[in-house]
Image 1 (cartoon, rainbow, N blue to C red):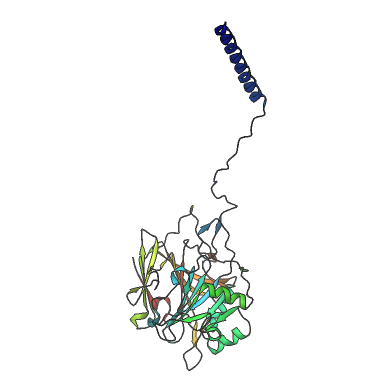
Image 2: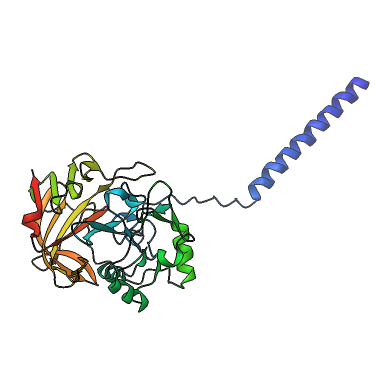
Length: 350
């Protein structure tokens, strides 16, 4: 009897369990389905999202709107190698006095930790910085440059007012070849003088995109430019077919960074011929930044004869009135005196 009762009880339990399972299954079927999670793929950058850096033409997913910074960098042999030069989007090389050149380095897409040695301003440096809507950094000035700075021609800070505070002297070099400034201090200086931080200008440079091929040019794998007879101001650019970049040397030594030891590499080398006139007994110059003239453009291992003109205040290469496109990347621009001119200062080899 007990066994029969146990069997009947077991049957009842099984039936109850089956009923519970049936109820759960049917209840689950009646519940509304959970919506599937939709995961957006990482779509490639579209045309509306594709930006290019104003002064390098390099593609970017973000628009670069920060104000450019232009710093006067010393190029005396005692100031080499420089610091922070390899991060510049563009470098202008211009004569100061005699056959000694200085660099006016434009920074926007890359900002080094430190830059220098910083050197004194000339009036044509100030004018270029103003034309590029750049914040201007120098240590010292010529009389004409000081008049422009005092008149507010460009937002700036100068080591004459901030030596030992924003600007620091290195101990491994002697003045005037040892003034440096960090980019944190440049930003602090911009705040101190109430300078705008956004770029209000518009780049006048044109670059090839990935779907375009550079215009065929006469081959030139090596470029030499000599400022006078001093071998320390004999510059050579050598094209590398693998990297599609030019290295640069002065006095037989590669141009590079003092701290990182990175070698300077540029995508474009430009030469603009313009009037240079000596204006005082110190040998200071007036350089024409407005009239245009003959130009040479080098990129991709090729050479193109062109002209230069002014667009939006900026010095740009043109050919038959049309903009000459540049290779995306960094650019080095030489301003060459009409005498001896391009032919007298520049030589190339295929």
